[in-house]
Amino acid sequence: MRELWQFTKLIRSKNAGPFELTFDIMFKNADCFREVMASGKLSAELIAQLYKVDLKRVQFFVMESLLTVKISIPRPVFSGDVGDTDVYGGQFHGPLVRLPVGAG
Amino acid sequence: MKKIKAVAATGNLSTGFREETLVRAVQQGAHFIGCDAGTTDSGPYYLGSGNSRGPREGTKRNLLIMIREALNAGIPVIVGSAGHAGGTPHLNWTLEIVRELARENAWHFKLAAIDSEIPKEMLLGAFLEGRIAPLYPAPELQETSIRQAERFVAMMGIEPIQSALSSGAQVVIAGRCSDVAIYAALPVLEGIPKHVAFHAGKILECGSAAVSQRFYPDCMAAELDQDGFTVEPPNPTFRCTPQSVAAHNLYENADPFRLVESGGMVDTTAAQYDAISDRAVRVTGARFIPAQKYTVKIEGAALAGYRSIVVAGIRDPLILRQLDTFLSGLRAVVERKIEDSLKLSRDAYTLQFRVYGSNGSLGQTEPCPQVEGHEIGLIIDVVASSQSLAADILPIVWHTGLHHPIPEHEGLISNFAFPFSPPGADLGPVYRFCVNHIWHLDDPCKPFRMTFENL
Image (cartoon, rainbow over all chains, first blue to last red; front, side, top):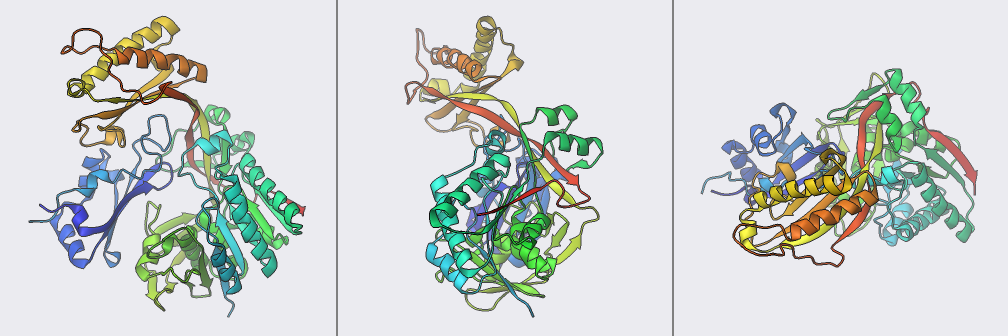
């Protein structure tokens, strides 16, 4: 099974303000984009499950013209609060990088 | 048809740019130089403490070049979110640097300062009048939480900056300010439509971040007209492509198409990005949808306590295979000790074991928290109501943990590899963002206090 990073040129997470996290997933080319999207593995449901957030709070944007998927979720802990682990939100994409997606 | 050329010195005033790039950008006919100096990205500390995020010398160097070039060309400089958090102390920190530069270089110009710190009484009044509304997600806001917070700022839109420019200010230092407003204020004043000016502002606000490969932080420039704008990096070794410019639209936004600003929303769903050379991109097609009510975003920070930490490694595989039990057992023992010796109940402080090698980066969100490596890094993290209390709790935890038993070893063991002596440090006050709300204003300039100085 191939992994998400093998199809992309960028997977990143970042704060979108102190209260939300946003993920940008940019694909290498149209074939990579289509193969991953057709697999159905990268979805709002997956994000809700992986990051333990309510599905209704997952914003999932598909931008085919940019070969990009953008996802935003509320932060589990607000940036810099006593229990926060990642003030910039820059490592939350980690669990997505090796997500099994394509065949072979 | 009038065109306005906007130059962004860099993405953040503290990070810098190449002097020759800014000189070239201004020579190419800039109408103003803008620069953002702040963000909430680095957490609530700066807003809460009133400390600016330096470096001071680097900030001074950047302001020196920006103001010198602007004075030579007779154009304004606009700095937003002064001193990182945009409160009164952050604004004053920046103003002091500007005054120092004027003295040292015998410069004379009109300086405008726009203070965006909101006195608590003013905010309380607005709150009680029902003019404050939560965004999602937002901490709960109450009268007491407003009174107890350290500091509030409101994020200004274009109007206070326009007012400063209309009064003839050549250098405008603004407190907390929308990044986009820094670049949209002057163009809109000169008749550029808002859909063009605001979209250009979003692309410019991170300096050279919208190029295809940013080798180092540097300047960015855009020429705005009635129909759209053309973005072209003034550094000849950088290139913009339609993809790089469109992709920057996504950066740090929750929604890639709808950018909410004071006074309205920029909708870029139908925006077009066309290459007009191998390094310049023409952008058209954004829409500006005016808001029904004029609102500004408020930011606030409240003191959450004082932190002391210890750093340690654990390498013993027998401890690692039962790490959760080990740490929960240790927690139970130290809570009892803290209660006995310091008379502190469990809810009077926060004790966190941050386990690197398990879930140090993602905390409760980590989908695979099991330890797989041969060692872990542990941060023992105590937050209490005073620094001395946190510093008193900490040795109870680390010293107890050092010798906390596991069944497989008989006799006294030492579980932690401390890299340092002393093993930890007091980290000072901890703040939290205590507001994610908007404030409905009748006058977009009202809460912002403007002062002028002729240097």
